[in-house]
Image (cartoon, rainbow, N blue to C red; front, side, top):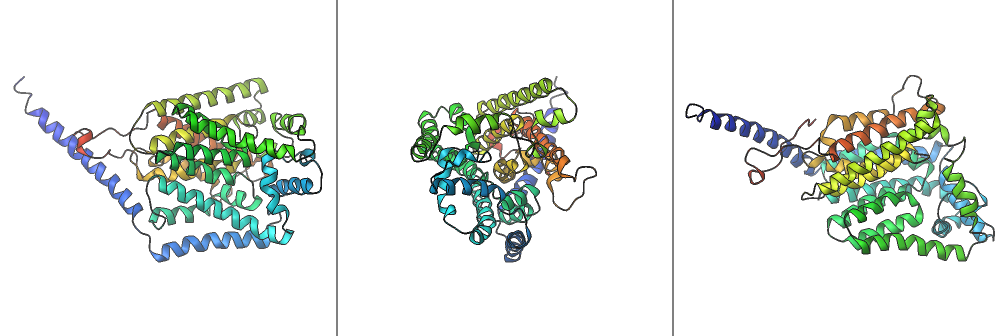
Length: 418
């Protein structure tokens, strides 16, 4: 025993030095990303986004396509008609009232408003994501994120068509930011307002359940209900939402939406899997995702990373099973996940996170997948891999071990970092 004793300190010292080196590398990366970006870098990022908005305004034949459905519903209300007569108006009655200001504008004004407001919403969501981890808006990470997102196909698509998913792109990080600061009721109000515009963040209500924040949950659920009841009282035939719109949604919409649907069930059926089996797999995948979100929440740790990863996993689990599931849904969770790169052990600290984003990078031609009819396979590759990487991290498989000195010894070392 005595002969072995001198060996232990040597081995422990070597491990401690290796862990310290890895921790220093991770810390150096976080410090560099948090550092102030040069004027040149910020000018490039802002210029790229401005060019994208201007180009869409000038040339896009589909600019504001999804926004038009909501605006037409609001105009129908102003004219005394039933908003739900249009089968492509798929939101709660409260969204009709939210669209009334747009309904008062002309086509020319809306064509400019859609890309500008879309880009502004993405910037607001990115800013809130950065503030979750106390990263400044003038940081290198902020500028690099804007520059990178310009080449991210889902951002181009959502800014172009003006889909109201943009409300959730802002609301999810804003709600997590409020929760991270201990303002859970404010977080519930943010989620409730987003649900009143578009009920995409319904899975996020489970975050309040996991956190046992009943007041925040009541606020989040109460705002869209109250707003929808108020809107229903002033519109003709509001019951069409239940008899016309809801069945259309439950069927996964129609042939127009199916080529863009990246949900597990739809993609598997297109690959020849029998529908009952395909949708059974989708439900199972969503259940696993929910289980991973619960496991991540129960693995309590300090800092906002727990909130971000739990919220992202809840949403990704829903995207796997929802019908339909479009490419721009990724933007709802991407900002907070990307901002977490400054924390050791986070999802972006593994190469698989970046591999998941590759199919959505603009400018590449993917053999046999460029046609509109096959675009969903690219989107599914990104969605499924991102969900898998997040689930792996939430389940605890991607955690970086503590340094040899324990929690008091310093920060976590980085594993698989860049």
